[in-house]
Image (cartoon, rainbow, N blue to C red; front, side, top):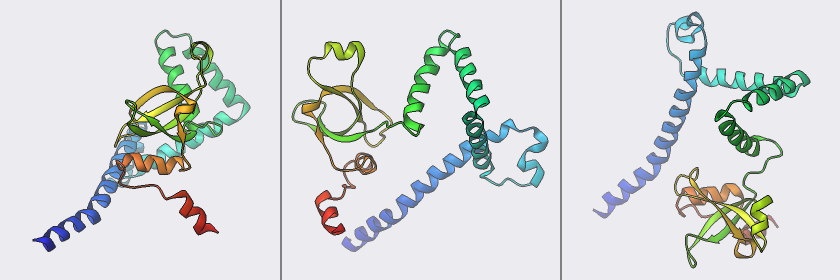
Length: 208
């Protein structure tokens, strides 16, 4: 029975990561293939080739992104984007949603943006309980005026899905800055602590 259990667990460890990776890739490709619906019926790859080949949506999405990016980087494209932003800003309700999403996307995807700056340890959700979080900035304006000490804005992600979480403002002195990279911290969170980051001291010694 012990050998049977060991074989079963080993099989799961080998198969589960591959199955989950394949499922995620299939979901991404299937979702992006929906962009093919914007093409006229006669231009659909399935109709032109007579068979369905997954992945054309990924290629079309990449072409659209590159085309829009190339257009938006020149003078005329920037003016067109600014005109569109001003137009959306005149529409009630829509402008609130659009401005919020645009600010987040500018932070996440712009070359100068830095959404997650540093991985830190904070006490959450109560004193004596610690978790890994990310510094996203510092309070400003009216919020900063009400806070007496030096505070930092912190995002506390949930596990195993780090896209959900909590935004809190914590005293900088109550945060312990970590040497681990953002990627290593995210892996640590997603794996629920199973995939531990490398020891920075050991990594430093190995490089010498």
